[in-house]
Length: 421
Image (cartoon, rainbow, N blue to C red; front, side):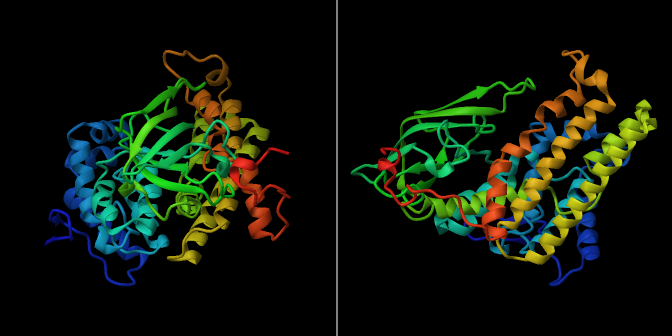
C-alpha cells in the first residue's frame, strides 16, 4: 500500500493499526511487518543471538540508512507522532509496545538518535511552524539528520536559565549569535543543534531567552571534542563566533524560549528514566556475569545483586504505569522521580560490576578494554545528563511535594543587573 503525505515523497508500507488495538495486537502487527521487511540475514542473526552481526548490518553505510528509511516510512520509528507527520498516532504506553518489540529484533533506531528523534521531534511537533515541521520531521523520522543539544554553558549548567550566549537580531531580520556551549554530545557529528540564546538581557533570566534550530554547518560554529576518562570523546565544547542564524530557524516566540525548553527538558528526563517495558535489564546482565565467573557464590554479593535486580524491575514497572496513566499528556515533574531513581540505580550497578569482576576494573588491558571499567567510569552519566540529581530533588520537592522554593532575591531582576549587589 502506498500513501502520500503533504510535502513529502510517497510513503510505502505504512503500518496500520485498528483503533484501540491491544498490546498483543500491536506486537503481532509489528512482528508481521518485521518478518516481511527485515533482511533475512538480520533475522537469522537475531535468532541465534549474534548481536555483533546485527550491529555490523546496522552500521553498514548503505544497509543501515536504507533500513531506517523504511522504518521511518512505516510509522514504527515514531509511533506516538501524529499520523499526518508520519507517526501512528498512538498514546505513549502503546508507542512503548512498538519500540520494545522493535528492540527485541534490534531493529529500533540508534541510542545516539535520542536528541533528534525524541527531543527535537517532540519540540518541533509542539512548537514548530508548519514550514519547520514539513522541512525537519521527515528527515528526523528516517534518521537522515543527526542532532545535538546546545543548552549548557561553562557558567550555566544546573542553573540553565543563567545562560549568557547572546543572539542579537540584525536589521535584515537574521540573528547574530556569540557564545560558548559545553557537554554537547556528538556535536562534532551533528547536522543540527537545539540552541538556546539570550535575546533580551534587560529581562529576568527566564524571560529573555529565545530557542533556535541551528544548522551546525553554519560558518562560526566550532565543536571541539572533549576526551573523557572512559577514553571516548562524544562530548564537546562548542564555540559560536558571529554565527548568522535566519529568523526562520527560530522556534517559538522571541524571548519565550524557556517555555520551549521546558518541552525539551521534560522529554529528556522522561526518556532518561528508561524504556517503559518490563524485561531483561542491566541487573540481569550482572547476574549472568556473576554466575559465569563464580562470584555468585558470595552470599553478600548475591544479596546485593538481587536487591539491584528488584530495584530495576520496580523502576521498569513504575515507568510502565506512568506511561499508561499519562496517556497523551505531556511529561510532567513526575518524570524527575523516575529519572532520579534511574540515576541512583545506575551508580549502584556500576559499583556492583567492579565488585563481581575486580580484575576487569583494576587490572584490565587498555588495548582490549573492559566492560566493568567502562560502566564504572560512566556510571555518573545519568546523574548529570538531563539535569543533575540535585536539580531533580529540587523539582520533586517544589512541584511534587509542594515545598517552598529556595529564596532568590534576584529572581525578578533584569539578567544584566544580577550579581551587582
